[in-house]
Length: 384
Image (cartoon, rainbow, N blue to C red; front, side):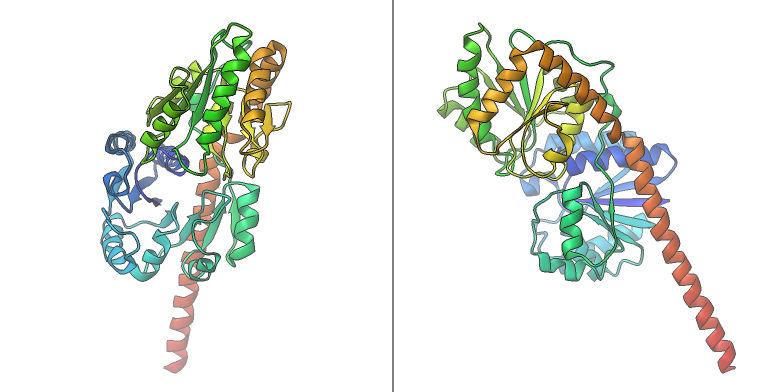
């Protein structure tokens, strides 16, 4: 099967990570996988080196990569012309859009193969009325969580299939952790944005330093993620006078190593879809402290694999982190639970479910065409 996955750009976000992992798995199973981006990284303010690294990894795994290099993704007619040329070269059997902006272009381009759309968040980045257009182009929707499924069913009229996110097996820990380090590392992963609410995490770092000082310990909060707001976040850290304990790394390609070096994982988001970084943390046997929002609630069971705290509350966030790091029995129990909960999120399971969906809709399309041709031939015979 020839599978074309469409992204906004090659970068280190959750949707992009999933597409990379899936496409690599598709290629390893003998399918012809291509990842197509609407824009180059530089055109949307993302790190060029991350784009280059991602494309190099994909191509080394036998996955084709292409960019439409659209400077303005809202020019749908221009995008449709460029997209049509790309699809003529790729000749896919199915197109899976991981960005809603590609769907109108596909409609204008006259795509003649099944189209799948995944919106990777519990909050829409487009008007709900857009589903009126999507339903005329999309064959199936994929939801990455129960919240995303409910949201899609509320607005869409095409079938919805829930396929939980997954992470790469390189994050898999062999065993649970027993205790945190004397000077622990608190890891957060995600592109700086309003959604991630790193302002609350920075404020929590100030409080956490004071809480752990009484134990003679100094925490390090490491925030990993690239994008246009990295320098703004670094300035926020300087203004809060916590540069000694908060490290804003920018984009990194060795997140699996950073997970192994960390002691806990933290998510301070105001809203989520189903964060892949949290799945990676779970596979790495890290206890998770996260905000009590959609997506996070589906991943974290309080007292089993992590702690949930109110969003936008630095005091609660700092207190939860300190409690987990100061209680060896709780830490060990949460690490064990985190590793166990990761069993649901294998990339092989995720690939199986996507391929089954692609096979269903491609088969249905072929059946419809065959039925139409049969009816057309019968009409011609009757006319004769």
